[in-house]
Amino acid sequence: MMDRDQLKAKDLQYIVHTYNRYDIVIDHAKGAVLTDMDGRDFYDLCSGYGANSLGYGDPEWLAAVTEQLSKVQHTSNLYYSEPGVRLAEKLVTRSGLCKVWFANSGGEANEAAIKTARKYGNTLADHRKNTIISLKKSFHGRTLATVTATGLAEAQDVFAPLVPGFIHAEVDDIAQLKALTEEHDPCAFIMELVQGEGGVHALDRDFVQAAAELCREKDILFIDDEVQAGIGRTGTLFTYEQYGIMPDIVSFAKGIGAGLPIGGIICGPKTCDVLVPGDHGSTFGMNPVCSAGACAVLDKLDEAFLESVRAKADRLRNALSEMKSVSGLDGLGLMIGIDLIGMSGSEAVGKLMEEGAIAIPAQNRLRLLPPLTISDEELSGVIEVLRKVLD
Ligand SMILES: Cc1ncc(COP(=O)(O)O)c(C=O)c1O
Image 1 (cartoon, rainbow, N blue to C red):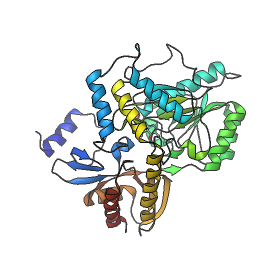
Image 2: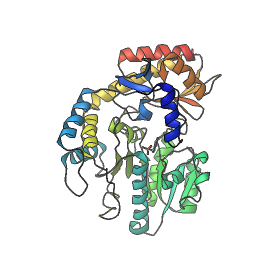
Image 3: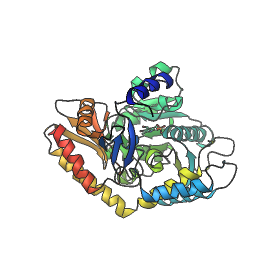
Image 4: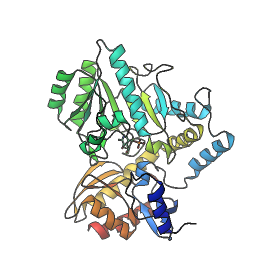
């Protein structure tokens, strides 16, 4: 077994350096607690960047995954297989939308949403149109098209020339969105209802509803990127439920896999038959092991479970709001963005790590994404650690 220094040196030598890692070597995990190679425990307020929705060692998810793994680990989309069909039925039933297309990641899910919107605008709308409007401070992925859709400038310049046909609108500014719509005649809007990388900001409800109305009026598709905010994270299965809108496409990934790579889009009546054989594909999309695990995730996230997510979020948010260094809270449910007095989000992450919790920054804010299954006892421990740093 490698010691810490050997491992870090080999990581630098053999892995393309696209991540500056924190100085922790994770060895194993249980519940909402990660243990490093030296036996140090950390409360996990990052959840593998929002992916480990059920924490670690969830018995039903583990049973579903291992049972499927011992039956058949992968087929191909050339053949029928049950887990993906069961999963699609659950997603359609619970979303009220019509059909699912499966990928492996959030970036790919949004890429599929963009291709669907482009084909719709180019071939099915009442006139040809293909511009897509996204929001400033948005994050939609790392593929070339999703990097272009992303509204964080630092992510884009070095990869020029980017994909044409994307416009970025101001956050929460409906007058500007209307003006851009008049000027550019878009086929789609894409937005995260709670912007993650942009600072964990929950979009204004009136803005979202007015944008959805504009979509109805002008035959524009509403793409709701729920890769980070979806699958129970904000206290409802889908975040759009809290905004009183019905998107044309919802993209999902991260939490649905509970730590395995799966994502996709759920399409409504206008978009569910846009892509046809030959238009798009993904070798691992609808992988049976990931799909079986995702079915266990959705089975767990029933109304009682979602109520418990909301209760935990209230408890954590109430405790945070009383801490002296906290000047504001944003986000929804267990997707929490914290404005701090006297320290940046990154500084807070460093201090929390010293006290035994891992979290992540989002712009200048501190971001918390605990597992949705975090127990009341674990939450008490988390609040104690947060108090040491923020009170
Ligand atoms: C809102 C949103 N969309 C898309 C992505 C990209 O997902 P992935 O990293 O799985 O490609 C992310 C990842 O953080 C995200 O937060």
